[in-house]
Image 1 (cartoon, one colour):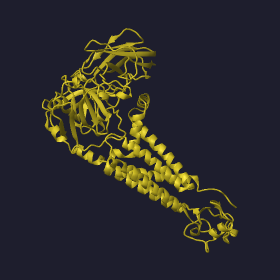
Image 2 (image 1 turned 90 degrees about the horizontal axis):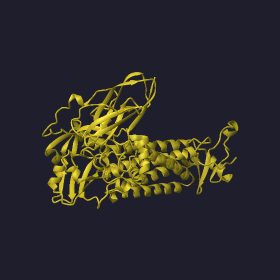
Image 3 (image 1 turned 135 degrees about the vertical axis):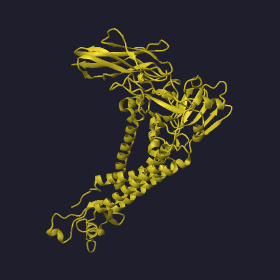
Image 4 (image 1 turned 180 degrees about the horizontal axis):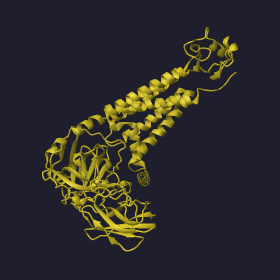
Length: 564
């Protein structure tokens, strides 16, 4: 009776998974103590985002929307889990294989961390300590799962050793190999023929056997360690502290409060995007896999570069300046024709132009290279910020402190520009420079250096593909041409004549505008509905369809409906 069976594959894979979890949990804990952005999983994910071709990023945004980062992180964790399981299986053959694999994992993490903006040697500690903890867990659990055979009873149960080491003696007498099943020579085996001894392994002069109880206790210990370390790391990363700090902020009143929005700005049609987008519904598209947790008490903003007087502001300094509020619609360049990545809010902050004037922008400067707390950059034209529009360093959104997801404690808001060149969240640094000397994050990835928002419109009612009843039907939506304003919206059905839609009020040219055509007589059958907008400059949006890259999509939003 002999077999070359090794430790069961499921057990070895489980050991690998738990060891990997310990490595991740401990690295998260150390990152919480050192620098949350040094968490290797996030660093690897950020590197993956940076290295991903622009076309693939656009596919991810189209396919997964605001969940693209969750999908990426989930994919990274799944890949890590598979590799960890394979390392566990390799370690069951020889623990050195598993340790070498974890070390290789650590090298990848260290490289990813060191290539992040503003990284330092201390930032490799989460990866190094985490991998060390994973190595310890791997060797420890394997050791607990393979015990000297004299510690096992005749049926492989620890705690009831066989007198005289019967299993060991049997194995030695029969010359069992590295992983062989020793015959059961105990007296009870004659009375219980189903009794068997587990596979044994020769480690030097020792015979070792797989012990389920040792596996269970080792795995439970590893899971507990990973869980405690992970929870502590999350707490140390600052989420709780930043949340408390945000809730404790009392927003200052603007020097000239805006009048309440007139009733005519919102048509209040069910299914039509409201004029003011609730914070919880406001779109989020950025490269931050984990939302930066920035303490307003330690936050500073540096204005430097081509300026006469470099400026460094604290959050308290910012709150003491003249506060203004503005209704501004933001739009992402990744927004397809008719897409969802646009929203309108009332922002509270200070004038970015005033801050720049205090610094003294030098002649020849034409770019503001703003940097986020996570290292992302945007390049904003200086002349746009200084032309009189409400370009803000915003700390309030719709009557409350900025949500953390939307840039708390401070973000940029610049009307008329796509977010990738203007709307830096968690902003910490603005360098006044030139477009011919510096590049922002997206420019070398194939996007235009300057991104003025294009005149566009969208149909919200009815929905594309909807089945509706025959008779009078409402067609409604929104149109936008930030910092120019929307002057007209036209709708046509089945390529018939264009008809003027009724426009809602617009308090400023920097917001979107609702529109409605409420007398379409819908007849049974399939119908195609199109919309186009004309801005205050007289430009009517083109029918030519172009993709979002390199500077925003164009085309008429077109939907199909079925009338029953």
